[in-house]
Image (cartoon, rainbow, N blue to C red; front, top):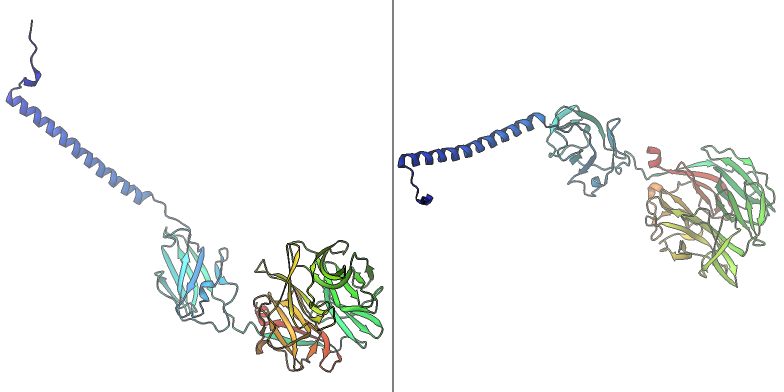
Length: 472
């Protein structure tokens, strides 16, 4: 039997063993070096590929712009909203900064489509100074006229005209003018003017007869006689309200509600409850609802009625000292605050005949009319006062020492501010109570007649407008 050899002790010749080991070492280190060289070549190839094939963004457009300045002590610049007109290449603020605003320099921030939006930004300042801006230096914002942005591709660019609008005149001056003297030919005891179907209607009592004139709303009204029918001479003109395409009013003698669908022909309306007051349209999501005060079970209650008064829903009791006759009423529905929906009342008399010296804020909430009394203005009598809504805020015309005061509220009736000299009535504006005040779609304030301090009827027309609407 042949005996197997032990491989562990099998011996190569010394020279042959050294040759084998050397070949293994060369093979091992050559393979490692080859891998390193291959990786370096691959990395270099990737770098070359990145440089040659990367696509840089080609969008040079500005998508947002903001300004700040250390000298802007009122911190107005951060709130400026810029319009970016990509089609015409214009950057501007629609709402101008206040009259007199000025800063020498400002920090400008431009936002593009990516974090690295622009490879270059060129600014042009008056007078004809163009330079490459480093996006960090402050600039003379009053002199900035053009901005040129270049996309990261270094080729595509876009030019913008820049305009920082600042009022060059006081925008809050109220410019008043007398439009007409005696625009009613007959003797007048009292009158009320409303806007109905884009026309002025003035209803007035002359002796034992009720009369009316009407005109299209214009800078030069051309009045024409309205041939009335069905209207009682005892109609309480201060109760006139407009709801949709219907005019309503109360007869002072009988308490009956009358209505007209064309301003000329009137008829009485049968109602489920006796109506004590017409407060006007409720500002709500459901248009056409009218707020009333009605008599029920020897109590005076608020009621909500549809536009034809055919459906009345009783609500909560009215407060004892709320006015029901000869008050001024406006609907307040803010364009900037969804929750600010009220009916305001001023002046007038309560059910007991006592004068109302408060301003009331009424609001529907969950089928209930909630009410508060506004903080009473420091000056001015509420008797014969007139409310109107203008420039997204409530205004009030009150009287003091035979003259009229104009007041407004910046917080929807919580506080009242007496307007400054820039909004005061002109010297030849006769002090009055019970004027009719309406506003039109062109931001004009119209004041019709009233009762003078000597208790005589006035039959003039005045028009006012904030300067900012003329500047726009």
